[in-house]
Amino acid sequence: MVNVPPLRFDRGARRIALWGLTTISTVALLFSYKTSTSSSTASEAAPSATGTTTGTTTTTGATATPVAPASKANSSTYTGTVTGTSADTRWGPVQVRVSVASGRITAVDVVAEPDGNGRDREINAQAVPTLVSETLQAQSAQIDMVSGATYTSEGYVASLQSALDQAGLA
Amino acid sequence: MTIPTAPTRRVEHVMGLPISLALRGRNAEGPAADIAWRAVLYSLRAADHVFSTYRADSVVSRLNRGEIALDDAPTEVHEVLAIAERARRATDGAFSVWRDGTLDPSGVVKGWAVQRASAALRDLPDTDVCLAAGGDLVAWSAHEPWRIGIEDPRDPTGLIATVPVTDGAVASSGTAHRGTHLVDARTGAAPAGIAGVTVLAASLTDADVDATAAYALGPDALTWLRRRVGRTGLVVWADGTTATF
Image (cartoon, helix red, strand yellow):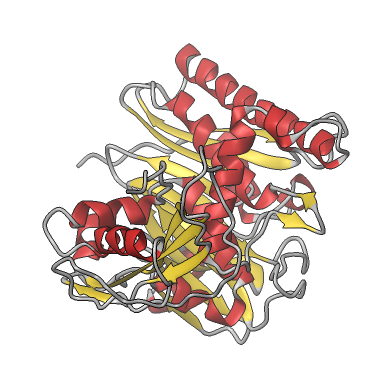
């Protein structure tokens, strides 16, 4: 009924879309839900997929910001944002928001992603910073490079990074 | 596991930022490294020519003067604006590259530009790379992880934390070196209660945007960061307390 235009996913959304292949997909749920809202009143909650969410919506009536122009006119003129209820996955709660302009999905945003305590943290296996005060090394911790609030070339001379570079260049 | 020798270091200043490169391994020195380093600097200067708000002849400056339309801007401008738009939506507007109709993409460009520039170093065989630009960095290693120090935003002469990085990016946001100028775009006011944010992610594009966006969120930074997939890091509050995520 409605041609779905190209969607913009951030990394998180792509991951979640992939999860949808094996788990309940909130994203897919909202796509089908969106189809129904675009042709009927926006306050109807009518998810039909095998979802664990009820697809309760919040219709703000605010104008969605289109990230891609609609390629052609659509019979539906629904404009606004629809937020799905939080869906529990085995990685944690997932919640997405769909922006619709003139009956077309213009954006899908993940408004809640699983926190880092579950399986996702394992998959990413990314290190968490260790506070210096928690170690015995204090300020003498051996380091290769420094991350800090953006400093300019003017501030560089006074920075720790400068000291490191000089040590290596000497 | 062998203990890597001390890295070879190179420093140049581009875009008003110190660019530091540390290399370890077979191609840490020599013509291949020199060529890759020049390619990195060229890529960063090219980004500066397009995005700088300080250069009158940059694409961004010409956009802001209305001399060219957004539709006529190069692809990379649209790429950066798309990243900014995702961050704006993800923060409910706290992060924005637009202020009073003027485009200032600095909050996105640095991470994006350094991530892009680092591609030139991927071709160096058997070489560990750590590329830093003004406090943000991209690093990878086939040996021991790079040991990254995180500056204390309340006392930039000291470190507040360390983190090993085998393959990824680290970005920090705060006011330590530039004074208060990052604002919550919804209010125009400096975020309250927060001293600094450090974010680790697979790409510096993501780490930089998330660090800047989280900082703009002020007291909500930690809650927001914990919902982001594929990120770890550190939040330092104004009172000196800290939280990792």
